[in-house]
Length: 254
Image (tube, rainbow, N blue to C red; front, side, top):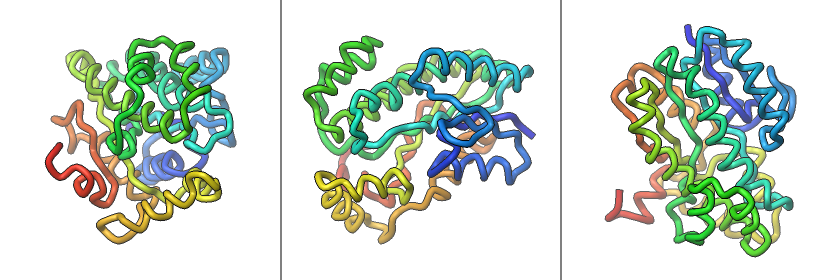
């Protein structure tokens, strides 16, 4: 059995992934702001460092997998948290735990989003994220809407993963990403209650080609596949788990 780390493990997709790993007999170390094995705010530098140190202590022989699932939604009133948590805390954690993953030739599955491909995003914001210019990227929160910050961060995350994939693979670590579509979680429920984005979210959910919203377990099933030996030759891929939405919106691009 393997040793895995899942952030955002107290709710939603992260919780479903941790439960799925637990059910298969793995050691799944959960990290979350709420009740979890390791409680930490990964957007806080000190708590981030403490969480990494605790993961290393609990997994002295390395990690078989990592799913950095912690994130905040587009409706979050503290818009600066969107790039800080959804992009910077994610890539920082992958880089920090790369040696542990390399020890066991492990895999990391990042959580992107099908919103990353829905529209063009502010080039300056996306480039600031990719260049690691934190203050500049976070500064865009003052002038950009939450959904633009969210989608742009997810777009940048997918690009970062693909750009980092070859070097990681050569070190023995497979990097891939899920791109969930509309998934019924507490985060999406909060979005539905937002007067600005709620109506468009409802219409978006109604248009899913497969005819239903995703459940967190749908995302967990895909994540476990990408973590497993069955996906041993898959690296640098973004797997859309969105009921066919991306194909509907972009039939001529893949």
